[in-house]
Structures are given as structure tokens and as C-alpha cells.
Length: 202
Image 1 (tube, helix red, strand yellow):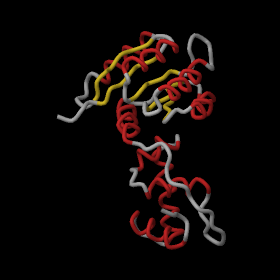
Image 2 (image 1 turned 180 degrees about the horizontal axis):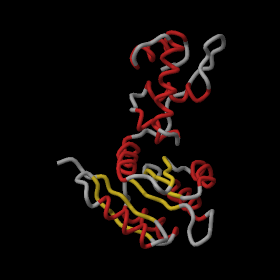
Image 3 (image 1 turned 120 degrees about the horizontal axis):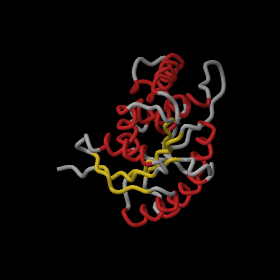
């Protein structure tokens, strides 16, 4: 039997922790490793339990920096642990990303979205291969280059969305633009064309 994804729930509100547990207890491939009700307890629990994924609230007891500080500590201690930043305050997401969060969800997400992101980031390699710059007509935008790089690593639209903190629909639009600019009809053709044009290198 395949090993279940071990998830640590870290949130300062009991209602949120109970809600997460109700969702995660319903699925077969995810197991709750533990929970934390303070940011520093989350850091300690990760050291002790070594979960695969942490659901990390960003604003703890009116402290906007507590979540990002905990993320940074966790990434320093256990860099392989994946962290999903959870917040109702979108302005905190960029700080979480800089601290090392692997994905972010704004509160109000659905059960399906939560489970998809947990499963996606569990498999994500955090640092994709570098991209070479190109010039000329039809040049890819900076975001399209990021998406193309992740396509080349075999990631799905959902995985790319989690990696880049953007909606799946936005990823699909970028993929469509990439196909148009590279005159490709599918991902394999787009990647092959990108290598041929020097957009990607091995």
C-alpha cells in the first residue's frame, strides 16, 4: 500500500483546525500527522513529526509576521517539508513565498482545491531548470517562460498553478499562448520547439 501523505495542521483557531481535520479524515491517501495552535508549536511539531506537508496559517493572534517566520524556520530545519500558506489576507502571501512556502490558498477555497494542492505540492520539485532568454517577435513573456519551464518537467496545470501561486485557469491561458507562439499543438511539441529555439536548455 502506498504511503499516505502526512499533513500537519497549523492554525490558531479551533474551528479552522476542526474543519481541516474533517476534510482530511475523509480521504484515503492523506493522514493527519498532528496539529499546532501556535506558530512556534508548528515549528516544534515539524521537527518532531517530519510531516510531508504543513497547512500553515499566516496571521497568528493579530501577528502578521508569525506565519512567515515559522515557514522560514521550518524550511531551514526540514527543507523537504512542503508548506501551504493559508490566509484570508492576500497581502501576506508574497512574504510567505519569500520565506519558502511552496503554495498558497486564500481562505474560502473548496475541499477539492485543498486536496488537489496538497497532492500536487507533495510531488513538486521546488526549483525547476533555468530558462534562457530569447529576443524577437512572438517572444514569450516572463510568466510564460516560467510555465514553459514547468511544462518541460512534466508538471500538470494544477501543479504549475500551485508552484506559481496562480489559478489553474490562468495556467491554461498561458499554455494556450505558448502553443500559439511556438506553433505547437501539444505540450510535447511545445517543449521540443523550445529546445530547438534555445528557450530551454538541459
